[in-house]
Amino acid sequence: MKKLSVFGWPTYIWFCAFLIVPLILVFITSFLTRGTYGGIEWHFNSSHYTNIFRYEYIKIFLTTLKLAFTTSFLCLLIAYPIAWVLTTLPKQKRNMILMFLSVPFLTNLIIRVYAIKVFVGYDGPLQAILKALHISYDQFSLTQNQVLVQYGMVASYLPFMLFPIYVALEKFDYTLVEAAKDLGASNFRVLWDVLLPNTKMAIFNGFTLVLVPSLGEFVIPDLLGGAKNMLIGNLITEQFLKSRDWPAGSALSIVLILMLFAIPQIIKKFFLRQRRA
Amino acid sequence: MDRQRPQAPRIFLLLTIAVIFILYLPIAVMFLNSLLDHGVWTFRWYQAVFVDTYLHESLINTLIVAASSSAISLLLGVGASIAIGKGLFSLRKSLEAFTFLALGLPELVMALSLLTLFYLLRISSSLLTVTLAHITFTVSFVILTVHSRTITLEKYIDEAAMDLGASEWQILRTIILPLLKPACISALLLGLLLSFDDFLITFYTIGVGTDTLPIKLYSEMRFGLTPKLSALSTLMFICTVLLSITMLRTGVIKNIVKK
Image (cartoon, rainbow over all chains, first blue to last red; front, side):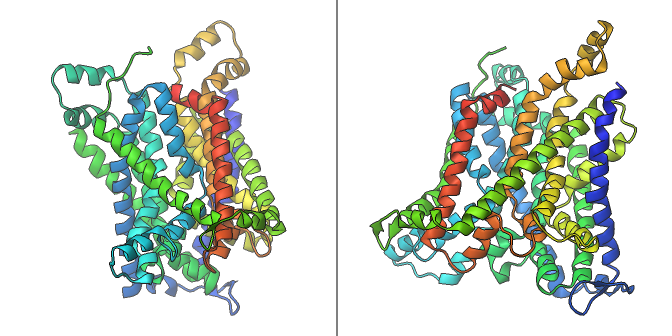
């Protein structure tokens, strides 16, 4: 249907103007020099890339990778059973649970982070409980630590895992599950041999959808992690908005982009091929 | 085929309920915090929020950006999905690649690249730049949602319609769009959600002097948590709840569930 293809043009032009051109500009900027008052001066300079291979930077990159992968795994671990439960419940209950689940995620990230901070904060119930039990704790490490960052990330990115899996399971032909059960399969075998292999693509999509924003996360570690738990996102934001070193920030972003392209490809090769064999 | 599906293991239902509990616990605590003044129940923090004119301005800004960006990105995204899935769009491959690129980029990179673009074009930051930025990142999610539906549409329906003499526009209007409606609704919801939820791209592209509610909340909570901020957050949360219930009433979510 040839005529319908005209609808592709507006989006195509939009992406060129606001996605491709800006990225090219970032790439160019990463080879330029920082102006005296921030901004950009048009002198070639490739030192921003060699500067990245410093111990402190490498450490930040590794911390970020670790956190992003744990977040994706935890999301999968939690989202898959929920999607399974949702697609097998009668409609009324399903709607109710869907509503309860969707409300926190419709809520702004900043609000959720704020609520977590109130929960662990000075007047919060956590400190009250610890006091009542006479457990000594450290004010600062209680309100800013890695566990909180991890919780915040999982709580924020769960729907990105839940959506694709839910859609896949919703379309799934459950008579296959009935057949497997009639033949004596346990719940675990139903999950492992029937559901999982048929929703591989959805899992991969969910995994990527969680992994990618986690790698560039800035807000959650900024507000819940403190200076000790710095991630790539915090580093880049610091370069762009605080020290106003745009070329250095651009170089870091280019490295981040390269990582983001490489990692899903590696997972895809590893994960999708192996199971097909 | 409205046949009962075999139930998922009971323990997973418990897990679902536990997850809901853990998600709501901090919000409940925040709500209590907003109602207490040194151990006494009070509404004074809510009064403080309502009389704050700066907050009114931020609220209006937030609404303008979310509504306009999600509407425009829905139009763009649905068009693109149809062109990719049904039309013979000549640049189909690169459009798909752009979509995955937009999805694959973390918000942060998109934010700073747009900041660089606006800086080099000498466009000063305003609500316009924020809206442009929001459209750019929501449109890819719209395409993802709607496109996954277009590829499941059976070709023979179109072919049958064509054999019966329907024009391409008629097929679009009477077959494709009605079939895509549930996907469009969930895409619009996702667009609104992403725009409302967005802090980072807004943070980079909004400039000095203008605020959306999340930006306001972020900058104020850096100076400490106050019951007034809890009241503001609670109000924003209640708006979300009301919105969700309205959606349930109008059957939007039901349609998605029924698919």
